[in-house]
Length: 269
Image (cartoon, rainbow, N blue to C red; front, side, top):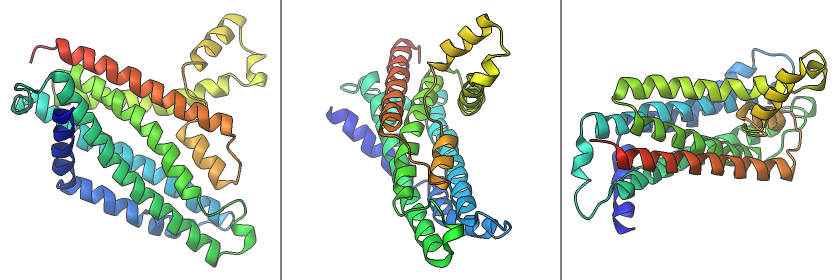
């Protein structure tokens, strides 16, 4: 446990000193300004447009953190064999990988805190300067909700990327397979949910319908787009959906990370 905590501490210090991490933090802070400028292009639903732009931009920035910070770190450790600096007694492979994952997660949590602050500032400004018709459905606290729900989603994405990194043979493979996997996690759930619509099901063969329903059970009830749209348009997310969101992404993260530990423990370094 002590070795895991120490590796986590080293990982956090490494990451927060990276200029790219500092860039992501500053970029998230100025995202509300971008949302304000972008929303002025539109005539209607200004408040909703701001929240939509903010949610999309922050999701993209956190995903870039996973791709360009987490993968770069793991690519250096595994591809350039610098993990040998850590993998000496009494540090086990499990302790090393757990420490790296914990450090990356805590740094991502820092970015989520910045997201929360930026979101609340954007919402406060929207509520203060716009008329009722332009801020319908927007309430204080939605920035907090958006950051928390998004954080759990990105934990499962980070665990998936860690699993790919310990399996891949180099940085190029890590990037290519991770980008492909993230693209599928962004695109497949909305497509599957659309295919499960009752009107669509009426025109689909029974075999395809059963297959679609079976695949649909694998994916979470809510994706990032659903959350952003619900918050921007003042639609309440039920407690059941929130509970399922946390449970599903925690389960995904746990399964992916356990698989990463198994692969890494058997890998020839």
